[in-house]
Image (cartoon, rainbow, N blue to C red; front, side, top):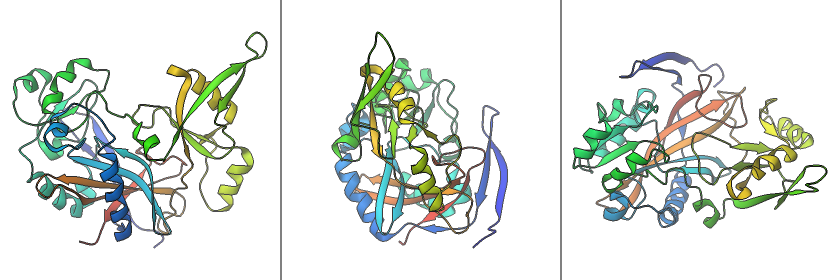
Length: 327
């Protein structure tokens, strides 16, 4: 499995910007047991993620398609997050035709979906949905919309009544508290008149990940570990880069600076080690589409991602490959 070939290239989109990619042909299998667990999680999650959108009103789900960023250890699905408005729908079929076929079948069950480009937010959606609509065009359009704006782009909130996913509530992570995946952590300052000492409740003594109450694209996501804890992970073969972790004191100060002086704390989920990517950590990105006829979540496949970092996400150095499942 070592030495699996990787194809490096670029894909350009309408704005002229190029996405760089490093695709591997090596397939990874998402286990049947993990699919069952994912469906159970999604059936709970869909009742926790709120929003006043077309898809919520018509089908009582937050989105027509979702992505689980996750790993599977010893048959147990462990979820980093559920992304309710995932990107990658255009790029993944380029490295995973298995996904492309199932995405096309999924879209055929829905009315035609057009997408709306938000300011400064280029995506790969044109590869799956064709040319984007502008905001003014979308306001005149009467069909379902996939809107690629940010929550602070308030002028796009008027499109929620035709949206197939979140707009104003994108990146809301409160569902994880209800599902028991993370808890709220608060920081306070002691000895304010003398030394600035920040403390948190609960504590940051165990390895964990801190994330904002709402956010996307790994913004303000921090891994918290002490030096001995990092070495223990390295002894297990997990890549821990020099800048991958923050100290408890550093993160306590960050939490104190946030609105309400709170963030979320999730116990550290150790990434995967893939035999064909021995010098990197890896995760799965598994997509599920909501079938409006069967009223259930259907697996679509996705991709594995590998990076020499403790937080695995999309960069120019990330290697990706096809994630499949048994039909």
